[in-house]
Image 1 (cartoon, helix red, strand yellow):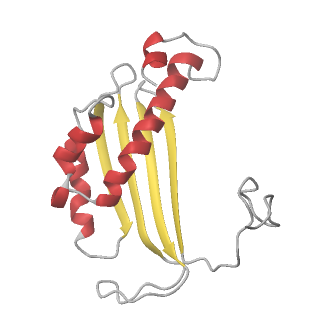
Image 2 (cartoon, rainbow, N blue to C red):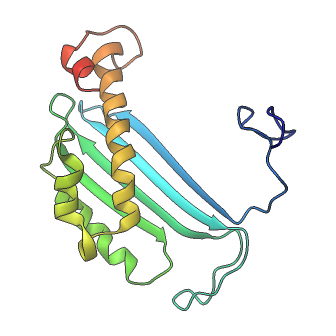
Length: 174
């Protein structure tokens, strides 16, 4: 077993050193929570998958190394108090198959759901199977978490980062 400690150039210094290896795949997921001027919150999520090698693909006539296999976005708009989804849109800038982007408009079916107990199950009923995209559905869990964190910021720190009010509901629902 390699000795614990940071490897030179390893940004994850708390992980043990690793054996020599070659990067094949990178998935990056970025989420950002916003407070809109109208008092609603918005969460944007982006997921990209990139291979370090070129790969065959019929629909895209191949995918060169470093070019995203997946590049997908979700923007969800919610009420602060009830965490009710009032708008949800998705975009797929890169997919391996031409049919994939056809599922993006179905994310609007999430409107009316509330993020909380049973949210993922209810979402799967609306955009599960061929009605949705596995990768967009995977993003719903971190979107929900980011929505809670954004809501917490609004309720407990105010729009400018100062101290607002303390919400017992936000403490109990974490």
